[in-house]
Image (cartoon, rainbow over all chains, first blue to last red; front, top):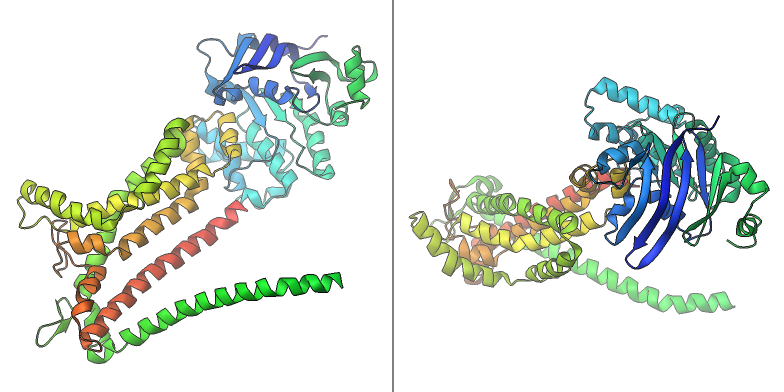
Length: 253
Length: 295
């Protein structure tokens, strides 16, 4: 059985003014699976991730050509509601970035934004999201404490809880463990494996072992192009392109 | 050996810094001591109750009356009206500069604002006397256009650039990360400013406001020139007032040293110090409380 495709890009280019950051990206991201983007620094993998929820819109000089289809709908098409899109495609950033407010308020931020005011409903969402991010047991007795009093790893899981509180379909993760220690990293990786039961996860990682451990599909980026995509195990054990092999065997990167 | 010589080399700069710091502190303490020494004898001439609640300021009459209440109310009313007029505009301007306007425009506006902050208050006072006062007098058919509203408007113009500039700094220093997190959850620009950036910048914004308020309390020249100078407890914004600062400036030069009037003027200075000090303590307290959310 082939899994359903959640996001499909066709001949997608990203330009920053005269500089072409991404060239003819064709990729299919399967639903409810983890797709990892690997590649050396500056290869465009994070830029690509930010194209999928249109966070690049904030860079005035950025321009996207080609198609990015989410459930068959071109998210760069005329009349696309970017606000609704970002609700559908959530994001977790490189460094944990909780708001300087309480744990509870952090998780409730998104639902409140989208009009949920009922206290009971919010309580339920906050608890559900914190459980979903494997943080509930650690914070259930201090939901009113400052989010910034948590450890880095807990803060990142809080950011995941905040992202899933608006019930997105896709979760984009931009090197979510690069600022964390190995223990905290392991917990996030474990969480990602659980998250894919409900969400389509696309994760950028600098760490090839991480990609190998947690992803189902892997795409290797180099100089703004996709060199190779495929099932993670196949890509890591028998890469088809010489450059992929050089990268995963540590000859550069 | 090497460590010891390094320590020795450290000793001189350390001693210098310590000396400079101590003398700075000593000068501050001396000023405070001098203020207390010159102001407390006022309590021998009259009572604290009469100073604080007396409604009449006739320092040169026979017998003299030293009621500081009208002066205090003058200072308080000018400060409150100035804040009410200027702070909303300042914060609006700060939000506009930090969040709304294109960066090219901000590059022009921000330095302009900072230059305006150095505008000599005597020039503003002059504008109040020759432009605003006649206009107010004619427009509202008043006896005099030099009044509470006039002084507060000018003082508002004076503190607006300072408060707006500092509040803009506070807003701009809210990390990009936090805005991104908000946008990525589907927030609009307005929602992000209102629910994330403003709360995160709140301590800095409050400090900007308090600095403006303290500037208004301590300002002398504008109120001396534009407030009308009548020692009355104001009943409307069109009444003339005589704040503590302009009273001291106007009367100190004509008072015999050591007289009751002289000591009472120092006491008025002490009141000003207490007012600004308590605002400062309040600001520190807010900062303390805010800190636990940010680190």
